[in-house]
Image 1 (cartoon, one colour):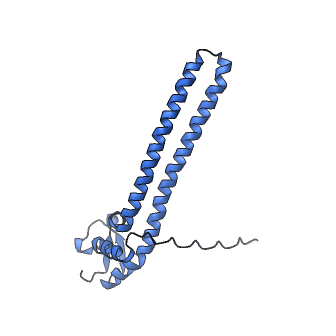
Image 2 (cartoon, helix red, strand yellow):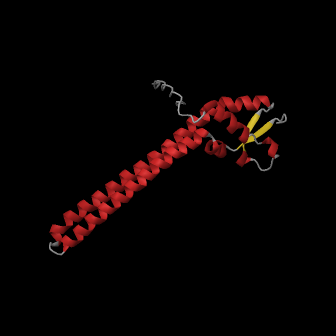
Image 3 (cartoon, one colour):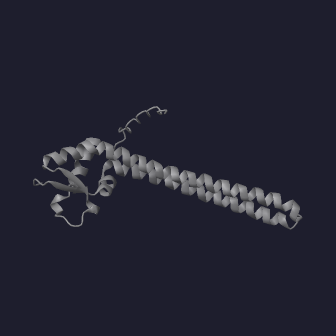
Length: 168
């Protein structure tokens, strides 16, 4: 790698092709599959409950049926919200893991930057045109794999305590 003041990196490829990113992707995929399976099970249970409710309707007056229908609708909405919350939590976990990865990758990328005499690292996707030789993604992945492995032992940086509010 020649000395160059600017180098580029594809952070998405860096994450997804690293051992760390692959471990995270496997975990997220497994949890996503579990959630999808749970959703299918819930869907089947709700369909069965809806059919029972439909069957009961013919033997009930509208005033008797309405509370049951409302309760079913409430159950469906609560279930949808709960499952959507689980999906959002899974996405948040992925973003948290990306952040942990990028924080852990910082020193390795800094070292690479210094080795090639660069003063800046740019995201490859934001560069209009560049020589392929400026892209250090493959080298960074190799170094990160050697340094971090699958990242199972990498912990998130501690959250600094908030400063107390200043009163006027």
